[in-house]
Image (cartoon, rainbow over all chains, first blue to last red; front, side):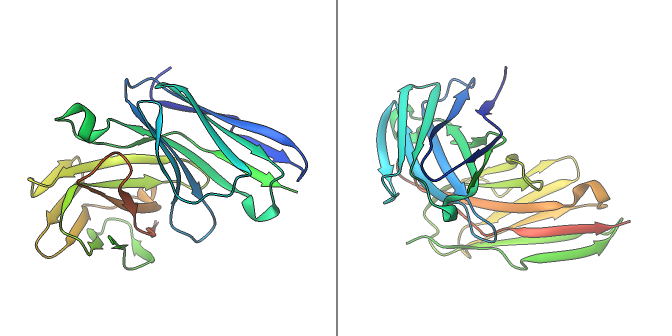
Length: 118
Length: 113
C-alpha cells in the first residue's frame, strides 16, 4: 500500500446510524486532515491533526468526531447525521511545517469516501 | 484572511489547444502553492507544487508559474488532450502550522475531441 488510503469508498447510512470513516497514510507524514466536499462548494477543512494532536477544528458539528490514534491513522466517527451531511469526505496528509523545519509541505489526498445520509 | 479565486469556473476548448488556468490569492505571505486535478467522484491528485521562493515548476505538458507580488499563479497546459478533462484546483499554504491551506473553487475543464 502506498499513499493515502480511505475506507469505505461508499457509505449509505440512516440518520440514526453510527458509522466510521477510516484513513491510513503510508508516506511517513505527521499531519492528517479531514475535508468535506459538497456539490458546487469549495473544499471545507474539518479537522487537522499534527503529531496526533488536534491543531484546528473549524467549528464542525459535534455529530462528527475525529480520532487520531497515531500519525498514520485517522478516523471520522459519524452519528445522528443529517441529509445535508451527504458529501465526499476526503482525507489528506502532509509534513507539518513548524515542527520539522525544512520540507515541501506538499499535500496528498486519498480517493475519498462518498457518504449518503438517508 | 486569505482568499483564493479561480476564474473561469468552467472552460471548454478543442483538443490540441494550449490553455491557461488562473488562480489568484489575496495574501502574498504564502509558503507554497499547489495545483491539483480532480476527476468526478475521486480524490485530488497533486500536479505541481511551487515553493514561495520559486517562480515556476514544470511536469511534462504542465507548467505552473507563481507571482507572489501580484498574488497570481497560472497553470499552462500544452497540446491539450481529452484525458485532461477534469476539475483543476489550486491551494495556498500560509506561513504557519499544518492547517492554513486554502483552496479555490476550481476550474472545470472540458477538452472536446
